[in-house]
Picture 1: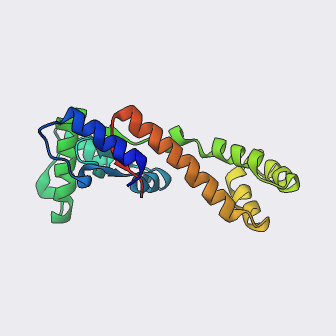
Picture 2: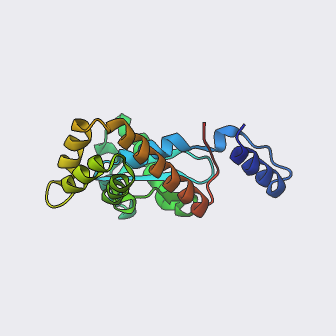
Length: 179
């Protein structure tokens, strides 16, 4: 067990003396990182603060629930659970935390930091040129492949997302575990 999990469990046992605690109630950090990295436009993603469950709901359904305009009969069976989740999110908003958006994450800044950190300097210079102006993301992706630093980039990005996820969990008071 990592030190962080031990610390979380110790803190929880101090604050919940008569409650039992189950690892299933902790947010799996890797799941949060993957959600942060693969967000889809038109979806609202939250974490249930009580059980660590990650829930994505289409903004359209959420808006209809908020405006009390949802017609369950017009939605297929498979969407009923999504509607239930949306209703729960709206009615119990204090139990949910919205994950950092793509704008909060700012992948361009992460790319800039990588460019400054990558070695050798010749590679850094080429990547710096690639990220300037329109089409920066496409040129960057092409360049990391051509320069054989793709794996370094994805490790760097993953580490940065992990740092952001941990900070977010702390700010939101969400218990998590890291495998």
